[in-house]
Image (cartoon, rainbow, N blue to C red):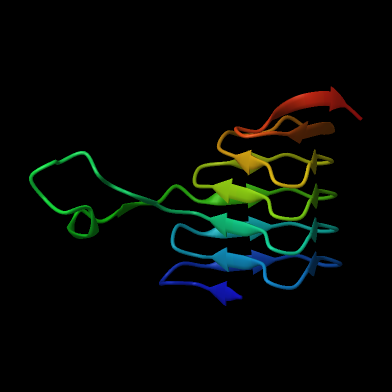
Length: 120
């Protein structure tokens, strides 16, 4: 499912997005070339603001930084990519990871939160 919600989703050449994956566009998503996104992944370039306790969360709006996924990246099944992240070229993200920070080029990463496991 591609849901722009007023933002943009750009997908490069030779990419695959497998079943039950959701890509939101609030803050903008750029997916470069040769990217593989496995099933049941979610890419969310926005986050709810919740700093003011006297206002309901749904009334506080969103922050949007955007997400970039560079070329030659493999995102495993069930991965969640959160706002503000850059997944650099050549990264492999293990199934089930929650990516809440940018990942260095040519690394294998996984976990909750996602961390570098090794270089590839």
